[in-house]
Length: 401
Ligand code: FAD
Ligand code: NAD
Image (tube, rainbow, N blue to C red; front, side, top):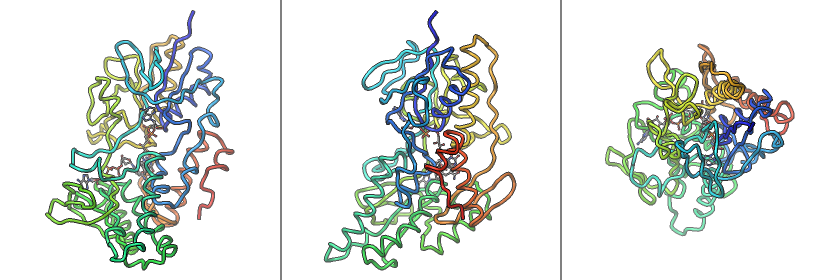
């Protein structure tokens, strides 16, 4: 009697936690479990704004997969997924092919460009270790180049962040910490550097608590950030951002953070999607595909209280992994009754750089240093869930205040 095969695609929050929970439940005794990821390391997407600005080394945000997953029990394949063939129950990787009885798709997201011309060619994105390492190096190169020019080029020191959602705001916050260091290092007057946050909506962080948004904007403005609110970007050209109001910003560094869509591999597999995300059933399976679970940023679930999708977050991806692992364990044990996924949203905390942050925890608003400490505790909590105290001590944010 052959064991059923479970294949997990993507070792982000969703995929890693599913693998880890399956192992904890001893599901490897009843099934052959394989985890596929394009790198041999797992990174915490929620920390990427820091290495992007250069305030934290990227190695702090990543860890070797075999250092946290027991690869004697869960097989790990380092390869990129190219295509999912759900009818034949096969996954095509760059170097091989896999077949499955149960599939978990946790391939994360891609930047949403809304088809705006020039974004793909001329803007950076905060998406992976590779993409943020490039941003950090590029920013430093801009500083180094500024001094080289005889006629000083201001666009070298103008940093445009497109979109003031949580990613844009957290990145801008890190820039306010990093830029003074670079000014010092390259002997450049801080006043020459511009950090511009461009947002289409009438406010930064649209939809978030107004008082907290005001706190965040005031704080960032006090650190030299210029906000251009109510100003959609309509095109990006080499060295220029064109705004819908007809104005232009000359900049050699445009970081695109106007939101995300699910992995294009999910679109290409022929699932019904909304911006690359599949509206999954309550048990996290794809409609009409009882052998496919979709979790994290590739999945769409509706908040029934407001009849709108939950924003895609690591918090939800992790919680989904718990339900997904339980349901897989039940299926391989021959059960048919599956658990429904119920998100338990604890709150939202966003950093503003250094020891500043804002957040809503339950109904409670938190600001400043205490919010920043809570943010670090959340980051440490995830490491604890994944690798216990040793991982917290190795990679955690131990300097809380
Ligand atoms: P990910 O964690 O992004 O993982 C996807 C994995 O799939 C990656 O390891 C990737 O390498 C792999 N992969 C992708 N394509 C392929 C392929 N073709 N083949 C093989 N492997 C592949 N959420 C919060 O809850 N709290 C926060 O504070 C927070 N802060 C954030 C800060 C930033 C800067 C950003 C960008 C996001 C933040 N989020 C936060 C959102 C959160 O990061 C995502 O919702 C979460 O990462 C989704 O988890 P996931 O498992 O779906 O995808
Ligand atoms: P988002 O969708 O939350 O924000 C994108 C912002 O870009 C919006 O404010 C939107 O109005 C703006 N925008 C869209 N088109 C534009 C244009 N043409 N010109 C200018 N502005 C434009 O996306 P995100 O910030 O990348 O976040 C992605 C997901 O990750 C969200 O679900 C978010 O909640 C989550 N996240 C959470 C945290 C946290 O909890 N600390 C941090 C980062 C991201």
